[in-house]
Image (cartoon, rainbow, N blue to C red; front, side, top):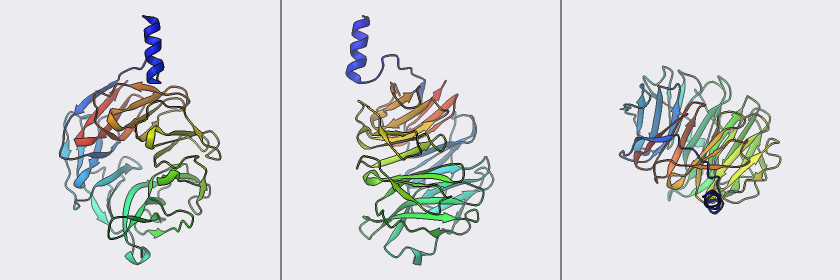
Length: 319
């Protein structure tokens, strides 16, 4: 029996001692859910297709929809503290200053600054109270990507200006900051950009791949992780000066990666894929997710976590 278990672990490419802490919270909805964010173990948000936004105040036992003035897909929801939250949908941004009780649409940028076409906002982060960044792409009339998009605010989001990225014209999917000075952006065609001067300048890093890279997570200014197409997992221990490809036998598209401390991290992806690392991302254990639906969004804490995805699926992790 022990030999059979060992053989099963070998052919799947993951250890046989994978644990299952995931259960289905909600199994259907009106569209795909793309993003999830919790401000405490009981209060959280899910968002996705057609401007869908919902809130729970009881740890997911019930969800209440919040109506916004948009039919665009909400690509990311993000809170920088319990009260101040942001979400981006198409070419719009909405903000809350009361923990989500009310949301207001805010003007992002003068259209004259984006002459090539229309903007599509995909990810937002603040690295201080006043400074934040939005990334995405510029689309032409046929919804084809014609340029990268990077916007910055230095007044808490009241005004935004465009930063030019002369070396990059691909779609940018996600950004992350560690502290104030260091930040990273990932995008299509293996693009990784990094800043070490508070976002004033961005330089390309060598990812070693041309796969689309969908998510980046840094624990500190040295240790970071990136996931993307065809099961690609990258890790760095030197701030991205060198990126190491992690051997992974799960060849599914991976959408999100999230580490809760220096050792423990999770990845979610297509067809219900969930991977967990116990050793700083060097190896990954496959977990049972109780679903075969694509999982697009991930939010993890040490004792609980959430993932959302196709057709409104919501799953919860309990330690």
